[in-house]
Length: 98
Image (tube, rainbow, N blue to C red; front, side, top):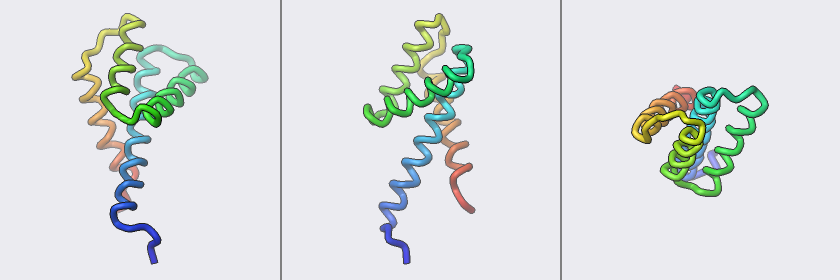
């Protein structure tokens, strides 16, 4: 017997996909920023915490865009959104059991 309702199971799956997506996105951004491994890991963790407390993808994308701009890396918010969408599909595929 499953102790979770279908809605709860979907919410848990969505949370996992979102977290995986943002982890992949943070890793991609950290690579663009040229961060060494320890700083990369911290950057990804910081983004996950930011998302957890901010709770909206547009805020996360704005933060990433600002981080890149400060490093003189010019990427449009549209490109960031496209990258996040692609990573969402990748994360979903990796977490979905067929």
